[in-house]
Image 1 (cartoon, rainbow, N blue to C red):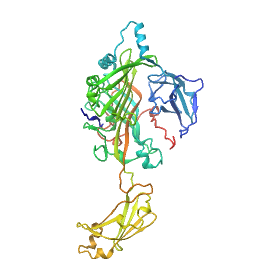
Image 2 (tube, rainbow, N blue to C red):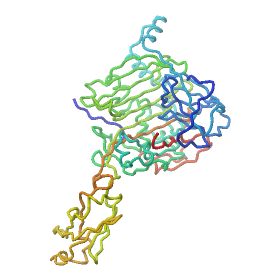
Image 3 (cartoon, helix red, strand yellow):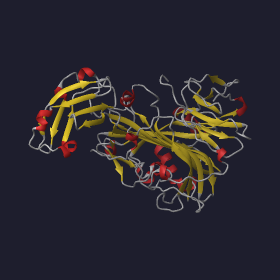
Image 4 (cartoon, one colour):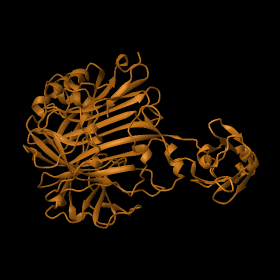
Length: 536
């Protein structure tokens, strides 16, 4: 059975804080930190950074990095936590500016044997993975807010090359870690679980800032809408017709918030289809501070995924109240998992505030292919009507050896009859090529008309290469990952949208949305990723 995929259009802390000299530029007005696992020294992705004494905080990025402004006012300590690791408090005064502060978290997990032993001591039967997931699904109405709330967070969308096809086009010039990075501060107003994200007018979003980050590469080719054909397309993936801008697409992929709506293959409708579409395995206990959390792996059933694809992931469920804290899902082409990244992947995490679970972060990425505009082509052609020649300018330096004086590289046709006109000579200059027309032949043509000459005379060029060996007008296809991400900085239970404010049009591009003024805007900030040097 072959199925097409779809998605919505879609610490242990040392006595002395470890510090390494930054190899990249670090803003002197910010504190820059990187969260690593103590043993492996690997980054801890999306760790929660809470400002102790407040309901505010932020999330580290996909490199375990986060920034803090130097002026934190009354904030004296931060708390860093992540599922599967011990929680650590750090004094802000210990952080050093102009350098990258390395913070280590210690792993805190129990394997399956330890889980069984704990349950045996308490004389409790060990629940199966399926029983745990089923109970978690049933308890969504109790564990998540059904009343209005809002959250303010850092939002960004961007692209990253999926292989070396994109970097080859740039020949290593500049950073290609982030392409088309747009970012800003948003506030999402939610009327509560059970309401429709698109349909309910009480579910709205405000933009307090949003724009392109010119520090990174901007490529209009990759910003065009999906056409699923020539310009921008996903292999074996169908785009849902629901539409919406990039932020709306991201919000729909929150399978907990939209547990009773269709999201993406093969989660489909989370509380109806997820269990019947997957196998589950209880892998052990992770901890979030002192909270024990079941770690459950899952794999898509073959009869559901078909012969070409399969999905897998992890779901983290509280042992105490069966609240789902974290969910990760990845969809792969079969037999290509090791060599290639997922076709798409979703990760979300919720956190407990006063007994209810609220979004902590949400990230969704999908791979796509696009025909890049970065290729060897003619920049402009200037026609001299008096002396009858073409001056041809290219967007890159051309290989003179591929032109020399070979006239067969150039073809001239005249009028709709496509009468062939001979090339008399080709002159090669440093930055352009001059193609001289056989004047006698052209003037003796029975269709010759000087008043329409510029319109009727057409020059075509073939088999010319640039100095890097790229053939003229050969449009390369690049593979790119599209990311959309929200990192919540503060949650406001009970807050409703002020109808006087300028809400986002859910269907219009974010760059066209109106910006609202935000009181105490210094409390929230964009966590822009650090730009890498070429060798990093």
